Length: 241
Ligand SMILES: [Zn+2]
Image 1 (spheres, rainbow, N blue to C red):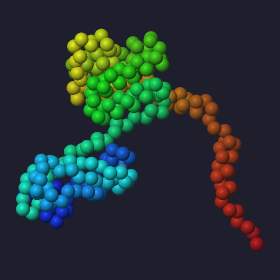
Image 2: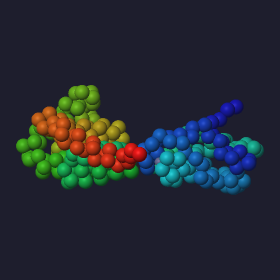
Image 3: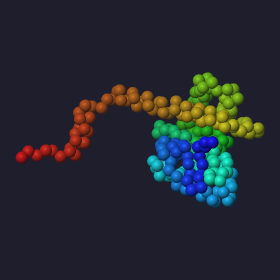
Image 4: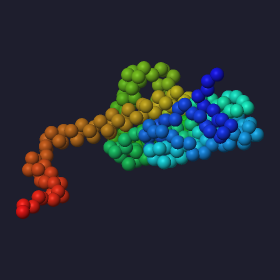
């Protein structure tokens, strides 16, 4: 019988999958083993799960994983092949073009999502749209609503999920009486909707403006040559004898 993860009686941990995306540096890296409980200790305690510490070979940060025990044998402890992740990879977003209050609210929204605090995540998504309206003016509300509706038709979001997203983003306190909570799937759709909304509103506009500025004012050839020559002066000039 084959298993892809087990701890043998010589305290060696065998793993088939030794690479992954590091939650700290984001690199797809090899994870080295830093610490694992001994075979004797595990056999004496017989826990349902064992915890191990790995290290990302790229950034040297420790990573914590939990394996479910699948079977007990004289010479090995068989583990479930895929460990339970203790630190999910962070959701990434480029905040460069966002106004500070919008960026701050969305950064917190992503932190709540990562911690699976879904109602807090919903509240911070609402705070993000509020910050956007503060920045763009109340008359942008309809445009933001249209953008969300566009995401709905493009991504074929079902009615229930769209209603939940609309409630979170636009109805705010009015539905406080029933306090309908967001499901994991709805939260995931809300996350992608928010990313698209922010991209369309700020990032896309900034990139377009930047591209147009470059077209109107291309760097002068003389200035470009000057900046190159400052780099080359570092090189020593050959001396003639
Ligand atoms: Zn790393």
